[in-house]
Image (cartoon, rainbow, N blue to C red; front, side, top):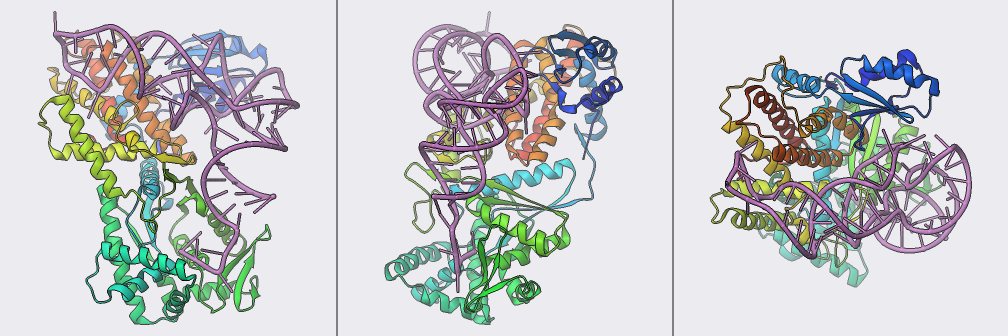
Length: 548
RNA sequence: GGACCCGUAGUGUAAUGGAUUAUCAUAUGGGUUUCCGGAGCCCAUGAUCCGGGUUCGAAUCCCGGCGGGUCUGCCA
């Protein structure tokens, strides 16, 4: 959990002295420009309003409380908020502080079939998953990330078969495998037969070591390529689990047997009937297992070592997620938390992306093009570039992650190069640039200033300062909301909003070359801003630079 | 046909039942630089899919349409 002085909570408990049933959500930070915080009194007797105003106006952080209709509008002392943040940062290095929670969370993301490179349609999964994991870690959970390697399905067997048929013996490369993959799907479509693949699946499930080893070797080649792509985006996954392990160890069989009394047979195939009457199959007629069982076995494994499972899934798998939940709850006495973060598809203006069709925009291409664009923009802004390629790379990665993350994940989106390469406005470079400004101010300051708690002067305090402080103060609330809803995009929006507020501050409030007290206070604000931007950036995957 | 998700300016978003004038960005038009770095700042234009209902109050909740995405495999 997060540790910080919670003004909101303090005020709520003060209010409850007078109105015991007061709802926490009726006190909120103002969003309309009337004040700093507001108490909504619609639900409570009007007789309460004036006495409550009096009571609140005596509270520590409140400098003014006024009644406007059914609202009690509060002005909060920004200097006290600033002190809270400064104290936290000087004693713990961060605001808010994190208290380590014993709860273990497993975030599974990406988990794409190792049959091709990551493309832009699926990269939303990795970006969401990575940010969710970082956000939960920041909140205080013990987090591990997981990748489930689907090396035993039909797709994987087709990839294997294609290699054996067309290129057997040739050195394994991603490109060679991919070409074969596309070719064999085309053939199967033309012939209308999948019997060859089915034959392989049977052999594989019966434990044929030659096939299992070769398939894993092939998967490894593809997986390495996928890992490289993830690495390009600054994403590292802790644990990789092979789907085939659950077949080899017999856990899949054990699992099927353990629920045999609730499953039914359709010929030789085994299925289970869900509450809505839908039949989902666990095994084929030939006895081989289907993905659902293998994923169930995988979930049992994850449950054995975690308290909370989160899986990032494309919306095409939402039904699968529900099926897993239902079966685990009903037949395996699941009491632990199980959540799915769903995202809608990313498509191209020409339609959907597909590895098999070969029309996908890959992560490699995206990173490459964005990097070139970053170099171009730097040249435009600074004349002949004096900036290292390292910086252009960081700008590119940050821009990509921010652009994809900021869009509400449940809305389908169309990928457009023009938007992806736009560094104006609501984008990572905007945040990064405001951070550079903050660093410059701090570097240019002649005042040897330490982050020491103490008296903060109100000398020449401007409204842009107060506004920025109030925004900064709300950081822990945003993390909490973001965690509660599993929506890291809230943090991306916050980072942008903060940078905007900082730009306002920058335009209107000189930091250096002011009176000493004013300078010190503004330096504190800039320091807090720097600290929080670094913090939030590390969650949402912005890689900050000191010049750009 | 049935199920799930999503509909806010041209585009992307904010508002998790509350305020006059629905936020911010982008795009478009205009302005702005001897300044702690202009990737900035200021002004203008432009939106809650439609119809009912609940409520003192609805972009938000409920019902019915409409539009888009997804599922409806002994694929994963």
